[in-house]
Length: 381
Ligand code: NAD
Image (cartoon, rainbow, N blue to C red):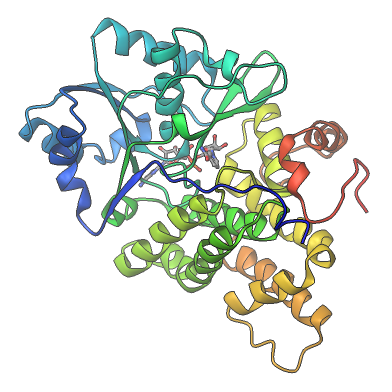
């Protein structure tokens, strides 16, 4: 009843186009947005494996000029955003296309914020005392090459402030992409370890958003299907990257899990992973993936019915189990998946144990902890 009494909203400002080979249609779709010269935002790794080639070809066939900005780094900083903004303005671009993972898509969103507001994106951090976004970003098309963050459809960008060693969010409907083109062919080149880490990131979005205080029926629906798809397709995509059906399923899972964010946020695993990404140069996917099992082990008793439903979505037959057994079965199923796709531990990812206390203190203040299904404190349990 408490949830029903709160005003909820769900908004998807992004048009979705998807299917095998969809990237070939980029030119005509971007033209429909009224764009004539795009800044194509990507990272050197994505460019090197040729993933921007079909996109550039299609844009040029549609008589759209293309300026390539390929300097995006993992956990992108305010500095890379600033560089992109300066190129966008000096070359008079009128639209953005992001080809890459969450880092490229978030950088493009943040460039859009700076272009229309004429101020650093840092001024628009989603935090008390900071300004909300005031203007819609220029036409942005997201083309994800990882199946993880869901940034192609979310209303968030995550940018690093190196001064504070802090990854901050900026967001709202004004920052969402106008269009996303989801083409699983662009995911085939992803190495197994990136497929695994980003795939469990998608699972974490779905599980944390399904069980958090902000959940609502429409986000529950997309989250549950995302969980089912990850359970069905992630092992296949990791063991055979060319399995296009598995790539298609994971691309859909990431997008659905992105929609499960709604306009809200995730939970404790994301609060900790995002905090850690500001302190250490860890990749977001495997980092959140290593947090998910322990966070679920702590959280299941906050939402036992929902955890039992997660177990079912993960393919567990809960018939004959008590509610507690069924809820705990979700935790076991996730630990098993994390082990099967070989997610490295935080220690293996280079996180020193002495940093855990700082991590706990800083993550506790992350706004994403507010929706967590159980109250948390710095000490844990
Ligand atoms: P990423 O964009 O940092 O890319 C990781 C690596 O994968 C890069 O080296 C890239 O070159 C490589 N790569 C990407 N696609 C490839 C492909 N198809 N083939 C070969 N190599 C490929 O990773 P990510 O996990 O997609 O994004 C992480 C970022 O997204 C973090 O900063 C995280 O905080 C953020 N994030 C944003 C949201 C959101 O809603 N905006 C949600 C969750 C996470």
